[in-house]
Amino acid sequence: MYIDKYKIFSMDYDWKNGKRSKTTTVKQMLTSDESIQGKDFISLLDSVDDAWHKHEGKICKIEVTFEPYKHGE
Image (cartoon, rainbow, N blue to C red; front, side, top):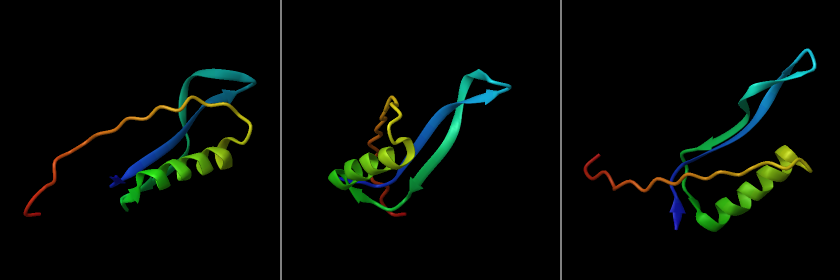
């Protein structure tokens, strides 16, 4: 299975004057329009998590969209 394009975001709370905001913002992002094998994507995701978050626990959410091929374009 190939993943044709992907976007990976790392979200976190902003802090101002020692207080945490109630909303999150994008802190880091990785995107690609190049296809990647599914098992390689999982390996990439694991490496990105290690590099970005080290020992910090994060919730991981994944959304997948299957679209039909666009013929003639």
